[in-house]
Length: 347
Ligand SMILES: Nc1ncnc2c1ncn2[C@@H]1O[C@H](COP(=O)(O)OP(=O)(O)OP(=O)(O)O)[C@@H](O)[C@H]1O
Ligand SMILES: [Mg+2]
Image (cartoon, rainbow, N blue to C red):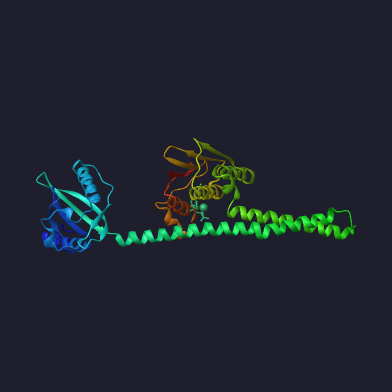
């Protein structure tokens, strides 16, 4: 039989002292009453320097405002979505980012202060930002490369092929000199083959970077994608623009187009949908693109980034593209209830 035992106070003290997270306790005015070793290390002050001084010493102005808000909510008995983040200003002037969990200190039913547990996440955040920066550089480089290849395919390969096709056509359609029947048939075959190669090449260039997007804009490009979906997949699709159309910066237009392209590719490959609706809404303070299908839906992952590890890059790519234009991407999906992709770009 197990016997219940209480941890001696000394053990709690040991934990408080030696835990790697920073812990500090302050009264309702913000004067520090206790701080552990890790707290000293995090903010760069000795314990003697910390005890008795105010938390203003190491909280940035913004974090101080946040701290007041958090404390107000805790006193009102509201729950917090913990942990949240504060910026801490170290003694040497360097700013650190910490994930914080806070609670009220109540002694004999009286609020005596607040205690906070903080984990330094500066390096983690920096690494995440670097990765994000790198992935956004890659997206931009990929788009430039696609544009260049599409242009070269069009100018350097399609143009000579078009000339070849026209010359082959001219040989067989001209009446003089008379060609032997067999030779004429061979040249007609070559003409057909050349036209097929030209069509494939144009499709390839269009997939890389549809000229309709640069020449006629996002709405026309979305309508073109919808027509393709109806024609090739037999899915009932519609594109609609709501509100007064405004011209969008090139990069915004391109990223919204890529997001819609990937959303439709997912509809084609996974959704088993019979209908798709694309809406672009020009609001007063934002432009919103929505792609909604009535397909089988799926269980959303907690983070789309998690999918990249198993080679699924579409949803994560949409997320990165949205971030690149400071937009907010929202996914909604439930098994058997269809999927909606929503991107909101602030003006
Ligand atoms: N509209 C949709 N309807 C049903 N399932 C979807 C839909 N969109 C995405 N999914 C599900 O989410 C998964 C992840 O999508 P994602 O686009 O990230 O990867 P993928 O399409 O499988 O591969 P990739 O886009 O990298 O070629 C898909 O494999 C599919 O199971
Ligand atoms: Mg995909």
